[in-house]
Length: 277
Image (cartoon, rainbow, N blue to C red; front, side, top):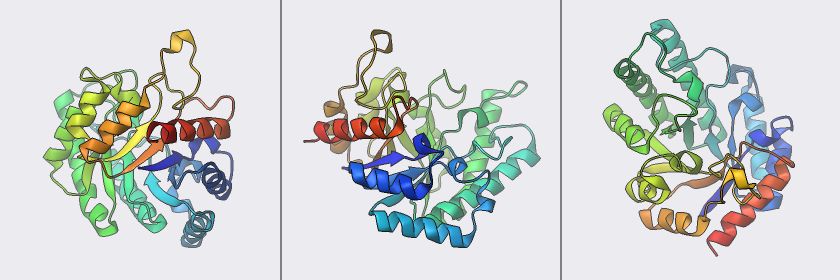
């Protein structure tokens, strides 16, 4: 099983240093949030992209792909009734696909909850059709760059659109493009009616990526207080993931970076490797 870490906990550090830190801990992959590198990927030159690729290679890690796709530039949205804004969003997502391809990444995770919420005045069905069209419009570019664009189901605390893996899979199926798929997020699945294990059984083989985090948002394996619940038992989770036929990366995605990003990443890596030993 391949373990990666997201770079955004070290968002203020040069990506070269993040690669080196991840490799020192033992990760073999790094997942990049584009907003940590620039406000827009238009600002990242071809030369700089080659530097990033070289830095990852020098450190001995793979660039897995991208997530937090639409944090910047501000205002993008995939379900808005504003057709011009949706087209602007499609255009930028295609640029992200090209950026991912230039870095050698193979997967993109569309979470970005606020940039997909069903807005006032729109119905869920309206939003569904618009999102389907947005993802479909990105399919050909994804195919050209050999990138899988995945739909991430998130909890109702984060968004009012696509809250279950079942919905994510249905949307991907309706898009009907081989480069549009789904991923699974441990935190999000903990809030789904079917639970973590059942969702992995149903969708593990279809998922192109997996985010590991505690249900409360802390990094996997981090000490929890009594009001944060209990740590996820990673052994059955990863065993089921393997049994499902999952072939992608398991990437650590914490939302709490205390006491510091490196400690969180170290604890996460130890927890994951212990769970598969």
